[in-house]
Image (cartoon, rainbow, N blue to C red; front, side, top):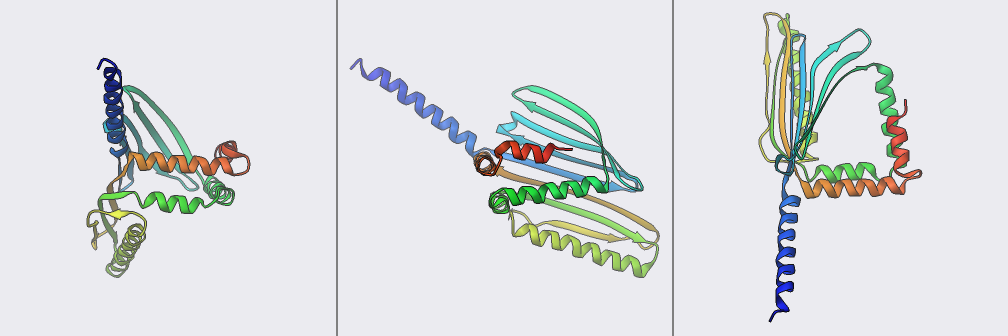
Length: 230
């Protein structure tokens, strides 16, 4: 009879850790995005929360300035993990050369990593879109051109939703609006969304990507060299 006690404790401990593992893997990773442009004022923000809020990541871009040849960004990054907070601020200048370089890096990774696009599509099928709001006002100062611009913006929005609906699971009806302004030239837009993916799916997707990285020539180090080279 005494011999059963250790096994009972072991069984209880195993069941406890199994329950905790199930709770963790079934928890949601919540991704919130917000973008706004009013006149010459722009700001963007992305918030990611995982493990019931224990892990948090926030990227804020409070200043977006368009110059003649580039886009200047001021970025603020905040990370929280197990109660430890880190915060960084830095500026970035995105010019055509950087855009072309990023495209070339992406193309290189596609060529070197086996079925990377398949991995992206499979991962996106696990994402659930819970909220999508996109309101825009546009005016050119001319009634005809304003009407044409309004129709063009509607076409862009509906095309984006059409493509998105084929990649992720839409759990809500997207809310969109385009308001024409006939009296003056103006453009304002505000977009927000909330998406979720189970923590277990996110971990599995990360492991699958890691395996693909390991199998390519040069392994993980090759990815690092491509992404972070000047």
